Figure 1 (cartoon, rainbow, N blue to C red):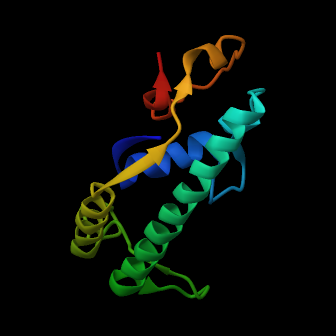
Figure 2: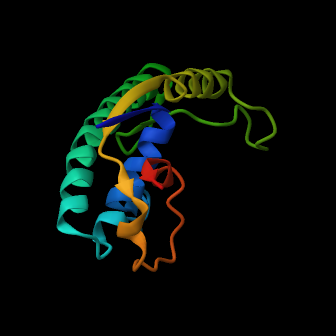
Length: 143
C-alpha cells in the first residue's frame, strides 16, 4: 500500500472521478467515472475499496456543508434553506453570510487527509481509451 496526502477538495474530486458525477440541481449524469471503464478486476477491486473510504469522507463533508448552510442560511417558502449570494435585488452587493459561508467551506475543503491506496500500474491502463481527464486519479499511477 502507498499513501498520498490530499485535500478534502481533492478527495471529493477523486471520488467523483472514480464513481462519476451527477449534477445535483438537474440530476443530469455528467460522466460515469473510471470504475465504469474496462479495467482489470484486480484494479477495480482496489479502486472500489478506495472508493468506499472516499465516500465516507464525502458524506462527512456534505454533512458539515449542510450544517453550515443551516447555520448561515435563510429559510425559503418552499421549505429549503439557502445562503443567498447577494444582499440586493440588483445583485451587486455580496451577502456577508455568503462570504462567511465561502470562507468556512474553503477552509474545510483545504484540510488534508492521508489516503492509503494500492498504486495502479501504468501497464494496466495501456488499452483504456477515455474521453475524460482523471486529474487526481493520475496521481495514483505507478510508472
